[in-house]
Length: 508
Image 1 (cartoon, one colour):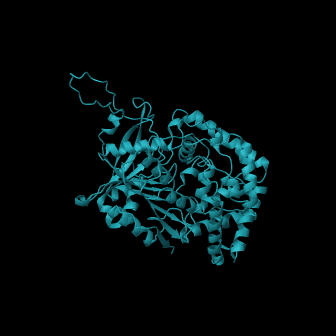
Image 2: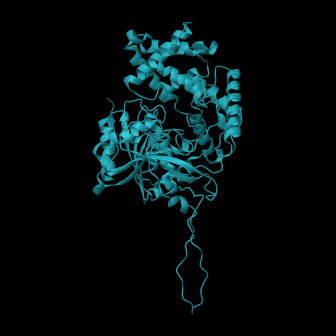
Image 3: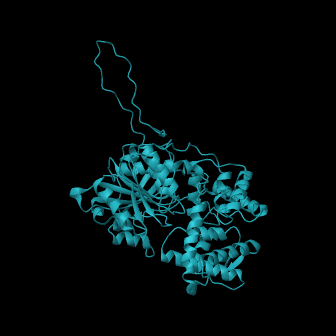
């Protein structure tokens, strides 16, 4: 079994041999170095922070209360500085059959989950009454103690561009982002890791007064679940991982290998848009729509496209496309089609006010509005594992990948700030291989591909895999609307019994 070693352990004091005439005393146990955190009393309060707090109002309407959990900044020095982790909770109403708390992590790294309990409880249907559904904003994210490098962007990722000069610009950009983090948040960067987030989860468990927790994690949350169950064996009850990450592929270059799935998702969307040519004007066949996307890519590589107050260049255009491909439904497809139409018009020299979806993506990528999100996301990825330091490694990978996919490979293989980050303090967690968990993945998931889910299923013979066939969908349970998937997950949450075998479900 592969296991990770905890940084802190509570060891029994060794006893010296006693004379035969002496009376043996019971073994003494070392004091818990985290006692003040494990035994803290939580103060539950309203989740509403002010009149504009939509998330807080939704939580209040659903009956949630919120609290701040105090955790150590540095678990190797628990008597030092502390930070807070914000949580929300909707309590079980069927107390006679209560299972316990269900902790949530809904994507990331960098994504908040405090606001998730209302929609998760809706997906859980009747079984929700048996759980305390607990949303958690991980350390440095959302309402927890923040980490902000004061970046001019919400994302560290860019396309490499069409030539070496473009790649060199992204290299300089990545180095600048790393330096901003070192200057503005250097005191907390070493502590922004998944292992510390898992340690925080266990403090939350203890502060809630629970011996075990159940867990639902999406995307990055699947990796967090893998790490938590490895570091704290025996402290989980029912575990659901949706959008499953192969732990051997997790790290600063996590996106490598998803080009094929994203190309498949782009082609599926193109067929959808072609059937609606009268609405979007992108072409009447899949090939014509794909050609329109490629015209935009080439135009942006020649001259940045003007879209309202923003300029879309060869580094940002692929990121817009990448952002448009994760949800397989008409609303998401329509938003993306409007965005491509706007970019196409701009490439033809027209003055364009971007659609709401495109405007949001451009603001995210090209302004500092979401700097805290990008800062925390990057800090965790860079803190979890080392990246190659030599830019030539990335340049060679980009060039090899470009030959196969000129749109996505320059994004997925490109350099990022982790190349200029300080070395991680801990080694990556070696994930245990005996976890009983329910895994969920769509065959066309463009973020966490189905191959990763199958790898984890093989690694964990005691797990079961629920596959949604025929959907290019990232995050399935309670999101996509497949009764086969939702009912299987809910049956497991209700009984604690995994399906007898893997389950295949058909897309809508």
